[in-house]
Image (cartoon, rainbow, N blue to C red; front, side, top):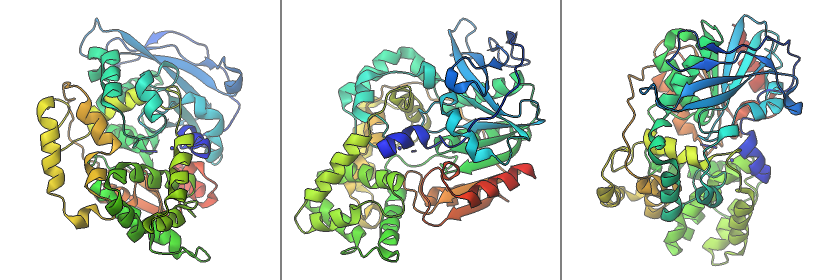
Length: 466
């Protein structure tokens, strides 16, 4: 659900344009129980941030229990940052993506997207559990996947990560983060707030709004993940890759040498095992260069004709821009959360490990060529998310309540060429939120509020000030 060095920057900056600097008046820091919140929740209050790069803001720390059902459970300290106008009557919670991205460290680049509301809102960011300063760190898995959602990990790295987290890994579901957000709202003494999410942050934002509808005044969803998740095989996104590649080549002056979707299908007929890697590479191009996709169409056409030199160069480029440390994009929390939250052909996280491969194989065999095109069965069966969660040891499924968003005041923003969170997902979410507004930006990529589109920022400002 997001990433580069132009994209390692996007690994840190898919959300990163979302807050710049503004002056902040200090509050007296006090340690208190989060008013009316979960047992064990604590709040330091707000005071000027100590980090030199964050002196324009106020910082605090929310303490929550790892296991909310156990008063003896260890606690987690979640850094919180407040920007904008600290005395404003309105508050907006800004949720970053991943799962795995930090919050406060991105603040210097984020507020510039909200110049239009910085006098009217307190803008709040936090390190969600398992991210940022206290990121879950699984060295082998981090090394293998870096800032990628789709890189295929080794079974050994997945099992090593699960062993590192141990029994704690069942307490990193989105449900746990939603409870943390509600503790933060109570700690800040906010009756209602706007919630703004980017990429995976749209998923957590929707889940929070569904659980606490009366506490959400506005819901902004940028680069949308549908609230009822998606299939681990990712086949609903395959047609979007064909559409976007063809749109890129249909642009004035682009002059691609062939049909890039047909060329991709031809490459995978010749080398079926490349399916998962090509899914990652083409998706990454939508982060790096949504307007032209670098030289991807040309590389696909040459490879379809038997010369894979440029395609190998493209894959090497993705290898160069993918690395990222856990503090920037935690693969530990990505595994712990996605493998708890998502549905796969074998069921949920509590499914028997011995039957997962058989059920996955059977599900993929049932897919039609039309569903798979322009990719193949290998892309569906062995993409990074499928492999990671197939090997993730059995853990108790989280409890998920009714996910209705009826009555929520929602604005959805989506880039026409975003493949990290494809347009089909935004349209699905739009249907599921009656009365919502969907704004699709032609040629737009991932994380629109971060970009240079003034019209997007104006649209968000107008919505939030209503």
